[in-house]
Image (tube, rainbow, N blue to C red; front, side, top):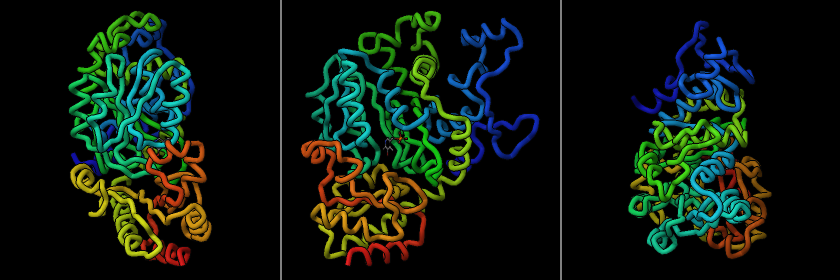
Length: 418
Ligand SMILES: *Cc1c(COP(=O)(O)O)cnc(C)c1O
């Protein structure tokens, strides 16, 4: 079935009340029929509800629907995108290990990898997604993850998927891709050969900026790599905190361990109410992503001809360095994110202050258009060197193009840039 159809139906079987809308199960806990049933549920002999930190029926619909849209074999929803990224990475490494990450990734991921994980004894080394050969130099026997984004936020880079995946597969290292900006509608990294996908559902999933959430989706390929006992010992030795369970023997080792170890112990679980909001959003995600992509491409083309603009970054512009990759991997459109450089800090700030229709908000993926000046906001904490590596210049303006009539958006920019 096509994604438009799956987004409306997958993962939901109507219960006795036959509600068309998926019910919101706001409940912390669930009753057991007997102590025997409780024991079976705890030992995974039987599937069912125990406690909402480990699973919830509304959240399960969201997880299954999202997993199917991504072409995954299992998924775990989390309280935010950062929780999804944190658990996906912690699931692969421990003190003494290292991970490799694309220099073009979300600022929150950079600080997680280079500051927070560092204090936990995990080293993070960066590579350029257009120069994946560097991965071979950086990797060693303690490398446990290779992390990058489908369309990077905010530098809007599209990686050389094929080359990165080939190198990662030769090394036997698990690839984790943040697919937030492309969404499962525009790109399915798992089908390109990636092992694990993570998302911030806080962005395009509702499309209205309604709720924070995240999700980890496991691909079929992950299991093969996780069976390597030398590289991933904790997937191949009994988990003493879970009745001696050996995760690599399960159908979905990666997502099962995220749920049974990390959600259980660290608890950044998604609220069932937020799961319900995300389910509503998924229903029309395909329609929205098409329109976001059309509007953004039209604005990018208009900006290219503006005298004040030094450079426009949008992957589906033929002049963009990402174009060869975008053409190959983003056949349905390149999403709503674009950026342009007006040369200096003050000019960029002036434009961001003058626009009326674009809101000054540090977010993306809303149906309402957004403007940000990364150098003074989201990327303020990065050093000049890190800014350069992330592709963020001082005069860079980022737009998250919404669903308004594109004529109105262009008129607003035109007036602000006079
Ligand atoms: C927003 C974002 C995140 C973080 O997600 P939260 O839901 O805000 O925690 C991670 N990656 C990308 C690409 C994002 O845009």
